[in-house]
Image (cartoon, rainbow, N blue to C red):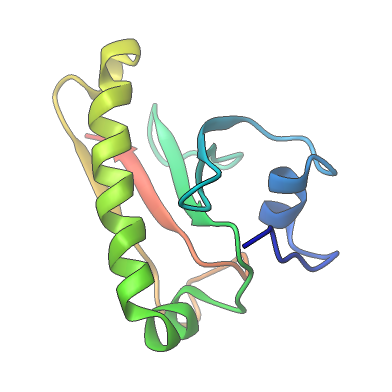
Length: 115
């Protein structure tokens, strides 16, 4: 599986190196990455994203529920490993996702936020 992108998706652009962005962690085997949010809601705000593009998190979860769960599990495991280098995560972190009109970027994602 390779990054399946659309030219208008900023996350696909970051994953392919076309758009600027910070990749915190990347797993080419699993085809997942954690990128830094450019509109943080917390001192740490990362986004766990699959390489493949889909129009929304809701559609992705509906069509690929097992893969969505795998992304969630990977995000938890990676974040726990990254806590060593990110002191703002020492008190814990929250994972959340949006379904429906509140989702502003058309790409599946799980938000990782410091509490």
